[in-house]
Image 1 (tube, rainbow, N blue to C red):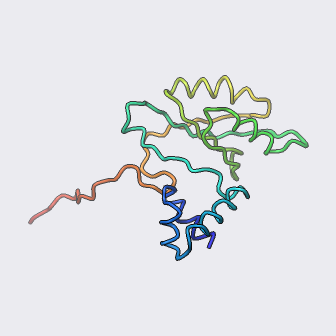
Image 2 (image 1 turned 45 degrees about the horizontal axis):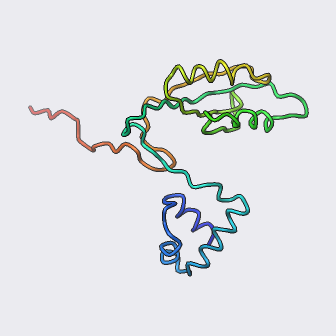
Image 3 (image 1 turned 60 degrees about the vertical axis):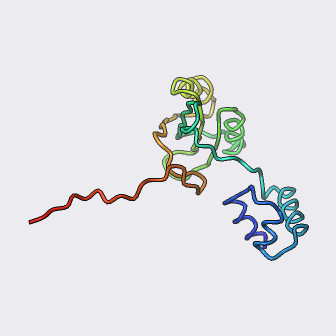
Length: 161
């Protein structure tokens, strides 16, 4: 049952316990208790709001940064990740497999602000070997939710004999 609650909440965290109870054939009290237990266990970590900043007057820039590191013996990747995610600018940090160690996603008010973060805070960290920064040009889907709906029009040109 926990799985069904989690899947439903991941699509719409605004559902009330009464709505969830009706959808899952449970009582609202059972739903509240299960959700409370999952919050206490750290399974549910928060309820973020997905905002389409392009529709507001607030200019935002999202950057994806590939980070290569040289972990110190005994400190490992977790210590480096903890130092990175402490910065307010950092939205997400992921340990990766492949050609680099971390993906760091940040939001800033401008490309200059992102550049300042990388050059003044991230790159100078003692375990960081290199950073490659990519700027998101447009978001179409985030957290499984379509942000920018595209019009399904047939753009093929009609050819007649």
